[in-house]
Length: 319
Image (cartoon, rainbow, N blue to C red; front, side):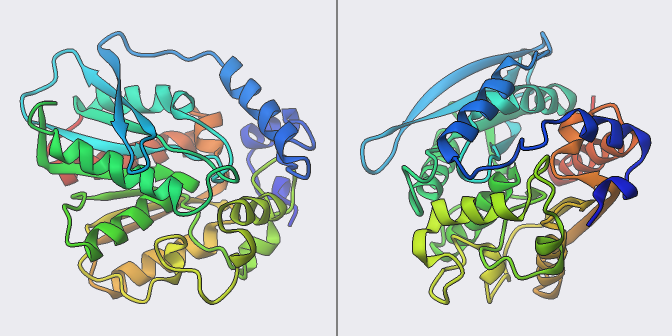
């Protein structure tokens, strides 16, 4: 697919500035190092009204999982909370890459946001990244009163791989009869290891998250099991046969994203299971363009839609 032909001038200009092999993960270590260097060099403007505090949560194997809290200095007592999981195709990224996003949400809604620094594949394959997310979420719920949170109003969300992990975590918590998030915010979630949809074949441009990168990400996470019948729904939520009794959700995705079809299908499956679900598709937007172009019209609509959905879930209005 020629994705440039379906973009407006703003998105097309951004795409034209990206390295032609930005998302070529053939040499995984080198590509990850280059991308992380680029991400860490980007300026981050954080609202002064929000303070950042890092906590360390023990995993079952003794690893200390870092959870970063973004707390408004005038946070309301018994604040709602958003548990956030960063993206990166399961193979790259860290909490800092979403500092601006998390602090911005905290300031706009006057809520506490918690972001988890889960371990990454291929060094830590499934289920370790998901285990880290579950352990961190359970810690947040268990410590909610001490942290000034309302345990009944903690949502879970994430972008890309983080969205897939948030969906898988919620499924696992449901099946374990454990405390679930009150809401799911799934931004272009990475849900299906099988990569069989038309959109998963259509996006091959190496400047954006593409088919080749996605296959490498899933292989790092699942190894030789990628695409095999025995992959479970906690690893790849698109495989879930039962989506009932899950919290309400919003699913957002651009129409030039390789995850378009699987995200639409997941939203439809949630609706079919009786889960209140919003689906928003943004024309002319590619994977991650909402964060790369925050001032674009589509990105502004995107953010307003997500913030409004969180506000409704928490029964609050943006400040």
